[in-house]
Image 1 (cartoon, rainbow, N blue to C red):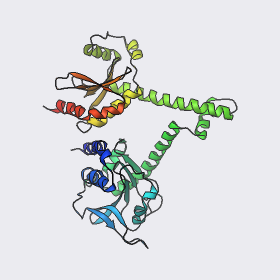
Image 2: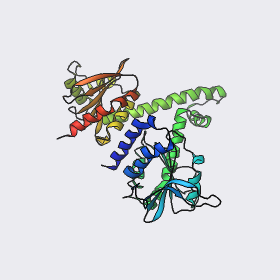
Image 3: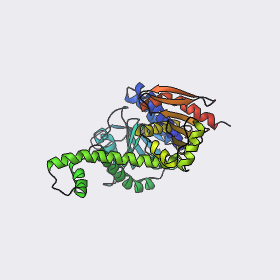
Image 4: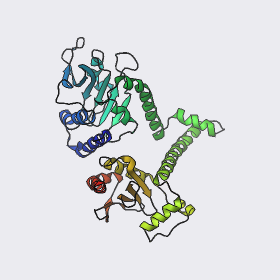
Length: 363
């Protein structure tokens, strides 16, 4: 199984079992040990590789334990501190990691609750764990940019120097992304003022600031939506809109062939459709490379196809109506529509969607 598939499999397990986890020990057993074993590739049953309840005396602190130490070539390389699923993760929860980092050979420390993994090193001061992580992985919202860096921590590919060299850029890029996300949700006064001065020539009074705070939020959301729509439209097909219309007409004879301009005007990809598409991709990535999962928007539904092939429909999202539906397909490619209330309800059809993809993969 490919690395990405192992990660996706564990992510699906977290999604399915998260409500059953009530303790830290259950979190370790259900999610963290499989992460160490299946994703990172270290044998959790070999005490020369994975040391549970790792102990080292630190100054006046005697007998304190870190949940796991991962060793390679007889040296401690990674320290892991675990919390219960759902617990917040901050530097106050990493006291043992912070102390142990300076007295072991480890250059990587991980703080996790089984769903979110925060990775630390010593960029700010040698042998002193940074207060901010250089990498954050959320198994229920995997950032594709984090996957190649995570792969460097696996047993077959472990390269601490490469990790440290990339950590600085990763740390600040991730922090900038989080800051941008915060501004896009609730822009602060300085952010609003920066852009207001570029488009407004008058005096920036309190009333103007309040007015532009609302306008700024609206403009940013429209900008993000426009960008997402443009990227999706480019990904939908590599052919012209006219060819797309012909394809739609073949699938739905009741829809007349539209001219290129008319078709562009009538097909509107919504944010809900984009969210639904990403959920379907997350579900079926355990069965097929996500690059093979393609969107196909039409006037009457948003289709999700394998290999961008009309003969391999994974599902259809009927969101252009008051009652939303997801259309699933059986082995005869007969569609069954199921009413749903929110896009998150798509997760209820995970097994059907994966089974559909598996059916296309069989010779």
